[in-house]
Length: 189
Image: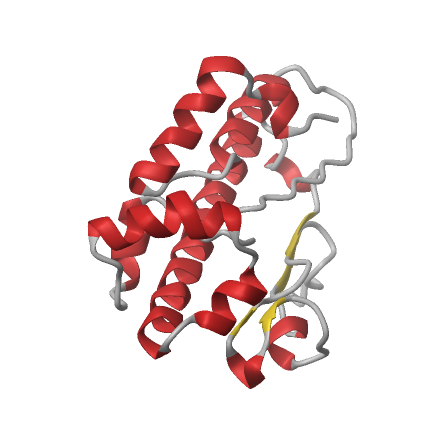
């Protein structure tokens, strides 16, 4: 078991958080993958690995490259700095979304999509770590990827992931890969 806050202390945590406020940045998935890269090389027996990336939770402030990849409306640098330094850390999503105009809601949606892309990148890195440590070869592993919930970004006047059983919260990906997951339909002889 490892929590990001246990792995990242002192100047490293301060540097990551400062970068995130100034420019947008990683919420800790990089730190978790760094730790996993070291741990997985030493694992030789069967194991259960649960990784919970928190990038897609409020406050949304993805690394710039993922925000730009989404192509939606964005805050100017100063608006973004104000959002990351004041709104994101001091105001919860209910208040922020309730106060947001249509353009700001669209920006929040772009930021959220950027966080989704950031998590996709972390997941790709995690799969690479497992593959390089030979945990995915010869059908020895079952990999499952899912999400705990979606998010409301002003739809139906709602925010975050509470007070609703809307499809936006419930319809999440669930992907499974591994031996026996898809039956072998090849006929022999």
